[in-house]
Image (cartoon, rainbow, N blue to C red; front, top):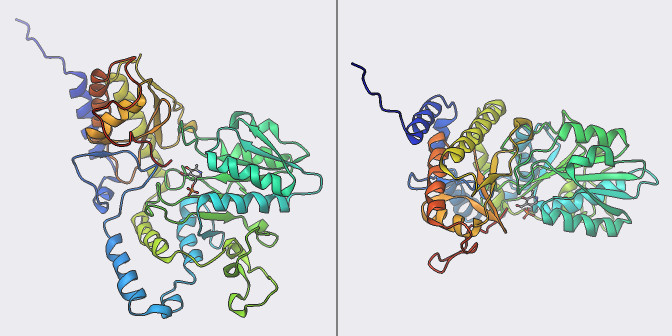
Length: 428
Ligand SMILES: Cc1ncc(COP(=O)(O)O)c(C=O)c1O
């Protein structure tokens, strides 16, 4: 007599696999460091990283004691004045930079401006062309256009896939995104940087979507200048200050277009003539935003003892597993992945094209799966290895399948009247 064996359902198989992967996850315990709840799945850390639990107490100390009691003394005794360089040195190992090469402050947009103008000033005679990643985050493109106009450069948009062959004797520099904010495609930083250098041009990288998500290797790959934000995978908080990297070989000649007093060699000398400080300090402008900056400094504690190789392996395993779950739960004619399958071309997010993306994302958020939307038709899901687990990935894909069953194909692409509020149309 033959026994009838029940074939496990796709969801049973995937849930079992998720539990195994979570059990083997070296980073699983890090999740406890963050203020997260089990009612929702937070897949928007590529936009705004989650709050590390210990940060509010630190911010309370900065406000109540450092500001409230020590007042002006905190600039010196409390180390406020040197925070931009000190925190830069904390970020440095996360992006493969040595000490003294990163300064924290301003927004990424402002740092793009400093980097592009400084690169134009560093470029050799006869180099009058600035290449810009044609798919760039818009702010970088707008600022590159303005900076090019100010410095007499011609702006040439180039698809990152063509960047290697695009630089020539007239190229001053190229501004490139390490990870495409829309698709999650990882660009070949070592190869593109080497090709730019072969042509005598400088490489400026925007590492907003790779800092804290994967190894970047700024020093190792000879990147000239780089910018990045700290509110995504570095969990610095809303609007936390960005950073500027200036490679060692350019520090002595780095000529900032915003030479504010805090980048002066003797800021309290208050002299009418400008004399640049040494090192990355040249990238400073005005008074640092201490509350945000010190919240960021505290947030960086969660990286203590984290190996970037382990982080990268988990990130790839998470996005692989999520794509597998999407394949199992979501009809192939409703969603298609824009995120490359090869690991060498993938950041730490998955982007799915879906004709009804606004309505689908609004419903996902209502059901506790927090991703975001890039209009008109891209669903984005960010996988922050420090706090996202494999069961989260399974749940998100399963809920996506349920939502697709509810939101009709060819139905209104936009948020329906019964789904109030923004449809995940939030910061990049
Ligand atoms: C890739 C990239 N570059 C630049 C920016 C602009 O950053 P900020 O608003 O800090 O200037 C963003 C914002 O999300 C981004 O994702």
